[in-house]
Image (cartoon, rainbow, N blue to C red; front, side, top):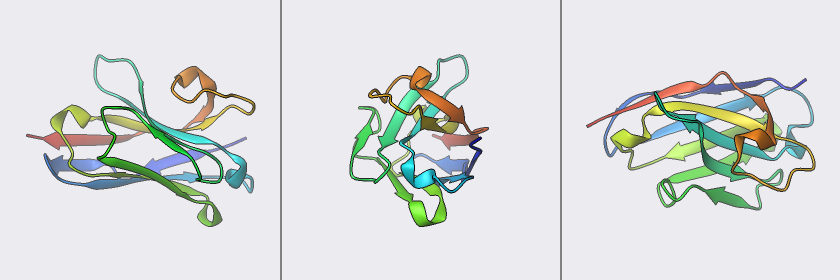
Length: 125
């Protein structure tokens, strides 16, 4: 069983920054490929960023590329999402998730087996 807990959300003005954290339980976090998703009111959950187990490869949604950075600290069982130059359209609940073993896709939420409870990010204009 894997437990994921997000933190770091809040209210920020447009142009500001936030850093989200995702703390994972268990001693095998370093083997997990991980992702960040977000869901705005009335919209479907959408892919934000992905990182492989080693951190050697990362992928981003076009909407956040150049503004967001995904990273991880396997020694601390933690993943991060640094969000800069935030825009009102970034307002959403942000979720971290563990990708299913053996999956080779990273943008679909159906490829992820464990999810955190989410953390709210609100960007005011």
